[in-house]
Structures are given as structure tokens and as C-alpha cells.
Image 1 (spheres, rainbow, N blue to C red):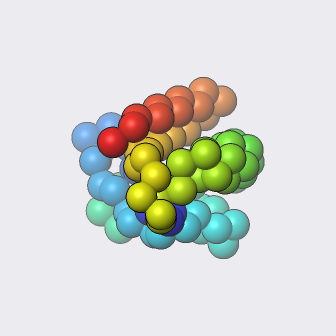
Image 2 (cartoon, rainbow, N blue to C red):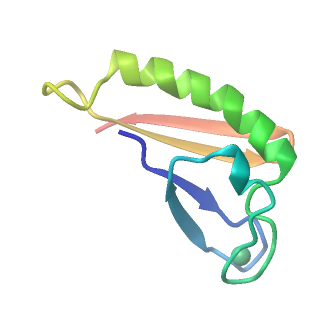
Length: 88
Ligand SMILES: [Zn+2]
């Protein structure tokens, strides 16, 4: 099950918007705390690629039927994408 969030990248703002699933209509969504852009179109393009990787990870580690649980954190910062996968 997806539990996706948008992290605000603005300095000194640590707002995390829980969205469930990130979709294209969230591009240019303003941060409710500081008003900066939570998801630029560049972030969205990067996210779509990452989302495909996540779909593969979900197949390896489904969280139903008692399989191993996996936590995946994705950080998009301009052209740099950081992915952390942790087995719970
Ligand atoms: Zn913010």
C-alpha cells in the first residue's frame, strides 16, 4: 500500500504533506505552511521514474500475506534523487 508524502524543500520549513498517492495534478501545489512549491514539474518527472521502481519493490515485498515489510523513502531535490529502502 502506498503511503506517499510531499516534503517541503524550503529552508526552515519541515512541512510534510500526506497525500497517499502523488499524482500529476499535484504539480505546483503550494506548501500550506510556507507557500513554496511542494512538487515542481521537474520533481514530477523524476517521481514518475521512481514510482516505477517502487512498483517493482512492491512486487518483491508485498505487505499483504505476511511477507517482509519494506519502507522506502524518496528524496527529490532538483536533479538529484535519493532513494532509501529499509527492511522493517
Ligand atoms: Zn513549506
